[in-house]
Length: 251
Figure: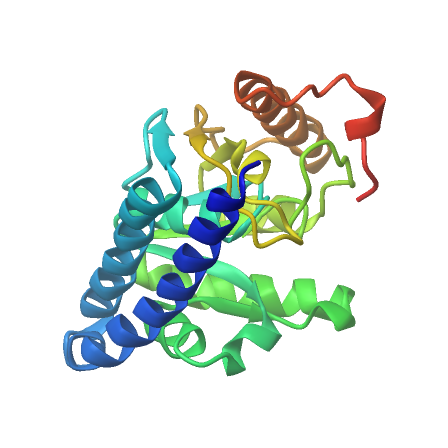
């Protein structure tokens, strides 16, 4: 990769965080006085800005495939980088995330996470965390929207195959909502531990919804199979060899 792409990457990342502060502060009256709809609008504005600036500065185009859900659903998503968070949120009208508790204290991000109804989870508490997450999600359901959870619990590098967490299955069972799996190849272009951002086509694909009513074991078999199969196809399309043992990194 050329030195110029590294320079572009640094410029892109710098402006991305600068614009986070500018939009978060500049539109805070909209986010607060406009209620949840106003806060969602501000968050989606930022997501669209990052997608636009990624294409313009580093040559990273982004595409949403499938049908983004607009009703009350659970979205169980593959998570490879910050960019897939933004792409998913830009595609749905009333999104909110299951997120790690530490992010509540992050400037700007924490403010808007609270305003749009995100549900913080203390991952250190494990069993208690799942119970608390489900209880908060039940309470939050009155507001409707798309509840987004990362099915493996964290960011996962391309080629890594850590196990899927039980959280999505518990929410699916207790909330009685359809579940929309979401696949991605974003990590091929936006690595977890590097400032380099690569040009190409980043894709988030919304898959067919899974109707409520599956047993937990069946859900836990179906969702990983769907997400992994479609994510592998998207990564292969991006030039990442999912069958190369060198790419089968640890979780």
